[in-house]
Length: 282
Image (cartoon, rainbow, N blue to C red; front, side, top):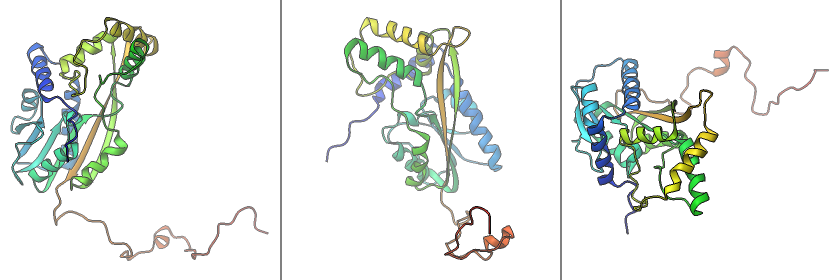
């Protein structure tokens, strides 16, 4: 059976990240991710003595967590089984060719009752840029080229944790709004993040000259702010789960409750054939 074509051109992605690191990266989204990871660790209120971080931005995350082992976000992760109490997948899962496979490898690297956290970009990221590029390209060429990576929606991503065998799964997200002097300022920032187009199916030829000027005009018309800037949305998604352990709390089996809900609420318990009363009683 033939394997599906990979989503990401790993060589191009690595080249973009290296270029961004040399030229001075824009890391404000990574700053947000570090803060949120630290907040979640405070909420857990537990000391982790062994930690691994899976990321494509080694220097930044090594500085934020100097005691962590930094692992590149390759398709096959350099993680040994049951080696760590904490594994963080940091701002790279949206480029994964096999997101579930990445989570499975991270789960295997956890000791029993170890914690997994993933931080990455979600499906509402760059909705403005996607719309403006699509409208501009459709009007110029009558078609659309793959230019922005597809990203998962929060409603679908929580299930990945359970598929990967992680217990007590939690998925949450928030949106970060950013403004720029022009749409081209956003494109420069994406380049400085190492988040340019690294899709395998991207067009290798240079786009039409008029594409980005038309995109800029459409973007400015539809997404201008009151102070004559333009807005851009970044959705940050966080997944949290635990390696299974006998010490973890588990849900009760159906029918095993020892207290009736009606007793707890101090209300009478109705039979199966009871019907709600509507209107005034006569």
